[in-house]
Amino acid sequence: MNSEILSRPQVAPSILAADFARLGAQVAEVLDAGARVIHVDVMDGHFVPEITMGPIVVQALAEQVKAAGGLLDVHLMIERPERHVAEFITAGAHAVTFHTEATPHISYTANLIKEHGALVGVAINPATPVGALQEIGELIDIALCMTVNPGWGGQSFIASSPGKIRRLAQNVDERVAIQVDGGVDATTAPLCAQAGARLFVAGSAIFRSPDPGEAYTRIVDSLSGS
Image (cartoon, rainbow, N blue to C red):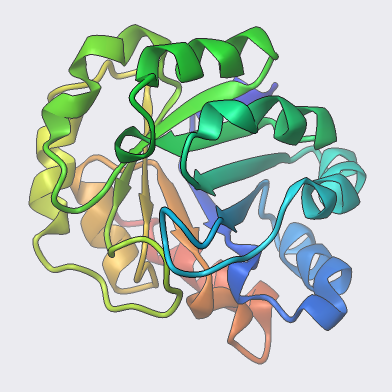
């Protein structure tokens, strides 16, 4: 079921931008609007400057998202992710994405995620060549092309990103879902879709809106002509 969700275009609201005093309610709003991928940004204060959330937040949302027929997509912006993936999957993560730049053990980490029953995502930063994913292509379910530098919400979309997405699409199998994260909204999402992206992480554009459900729908609608 999880892999079937990723086989079609999905806008993934990122709870990094949500109001944590009303987290469950805001997640319910986007799920009710049709969202089936909820994105969880985990930052450790080392790989990136900010510190955000851990497995306890994943655990708190797991049943709510599962009951809606969705999946929790956990994005680890942390050093040595292989030390933590099992805990996040046990907490309820359906997909775990880690950065090639954060560990010397990329293949080991990808296999570890797979062995624990989750979908494997691998991310590359804006300055990392797309070829970094070639050697482990058979292990990847999600290839995340960062469209901002990781670590800060609310950044502007890097204008050269569509070209990099096209190059990435040439370096991974068609079954791999190309994901974009950073500055994604109703204007930039179609550009990424035309370049080959299938998963669109949007935080500020959704949760900083007075109506997150309507903001989610606006981005979905923007993709209809892509």
